[in-house]
View (cartoon, one colour):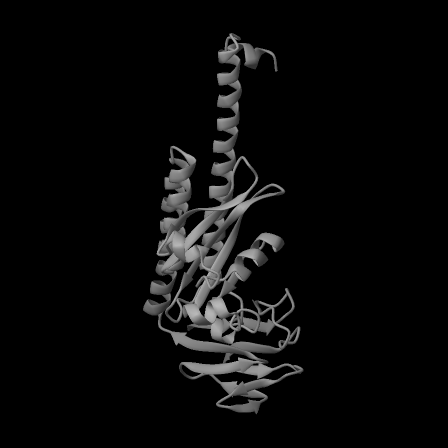
Length: 298
């Protein structure tokens, strides 16, 4: 007997796990937990889920903020069918799966990874920076399921600029009440970490922003473009409809895409710098060095 566990911590990607009977799953904030939920309302070791006596069950293990099921604080509860419950302030969904349903779930995850690999391969074949940035945004929208977005990129002049956008016009970006969240981009660039919000109405720092309220934005994802210690920019996508719910796998694939894009951008920039040096040398009458000479000098 298998089951699907999903947790929905605010301002984080949705946590989804496939559970197997015969194991005990600790739920808590501690990294040792099989089901780790990094939220202040969750105790380090909050609860345990296991399949026992032919039934899935959840039990509180001495948490600070308790376990709620059916709208009531409980010490334990049976999970006979699809069930909502709360670990501290984090809502969770539990659903027993048949063998076919579990296999379908695994196939869906594998399909997502295959799609991601195909999109990354396309980036590697980009012929110039503008094409690469455009393909990066299109791939990010496909992976995230969002409606619109843009890429900010730090070019040779070290100035961050919006280089490509989709679903958002340049005139809208220039407005003071731009319907995207500049705050999400700023937080992403400063921390060099991804910013995720599946539902802005539940986000205390993001939902109150006028740009989000007036723009009707419901979901946001912003991932940095970093290579070594340098931040080249960020990819921003959003949606005006509820969801889609970004999972940890979605975020992993999105970040892998951003890492590949950043590496390819850095390589393209380096090629441009080398070409400029060679061009300058040619203009000055200095012959371009032969590769065999360069290689033999190493």
